[in-house]
Length: 267
Image (cartoon, rainbow, N blue to C red):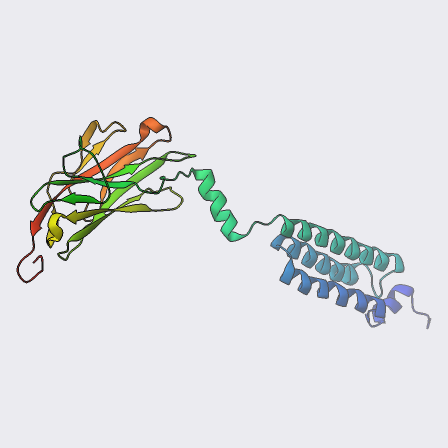
């Protein structure tokens, strides 16, 4: 009568895990901590799932103590999972592209062109059919045409190209006009050049934009269309610029030179 069945005796035994169970638990949760700091989210979830399943097995199946084969299975699964995760993380880090290179690849995949730089801004005192030079010698009062050549070196079409002109604000005997082109998808983003106007006789002169004089020309200086004013402000848009040589464009504007005041300023 005093005998107690095995099931009753097991229910009265304290559920104290063996040392091997404690060791497996420590190693498992250590792996979780390491994985959280070094691995991607899917690997973190996998290891946490393995740890929780170990606890569940201990509470529901390995009562009061886990079997030896069960512990060996969990340990083997932990080693295999850790090794596989390490290999996958290493491969992922080797194939990972730096942020700067990712930006560059994105730009290239979206299409990038480039405006050929160099001596691309010239001036003429005889209109668009005259001889352009840089520097240009011009007399006070003579009309001056300043133009920039836009040629796309490729590999892709340039879009949203805007051209701006910056004029000197002070009187001088040598006046530099800066012309800059800014496409939306160029590398480098901007290209510019200056056209210099030397006043004849080294006189001091002022320069100003002639309204309604901005024009777009083809590669042979044939007029394509008139452009709106604004080139000396926010700039004017010329649209797309193709790669072929026949898509080369010129943007020109007319400037007026006037004698400086006795005070030497242009106000």
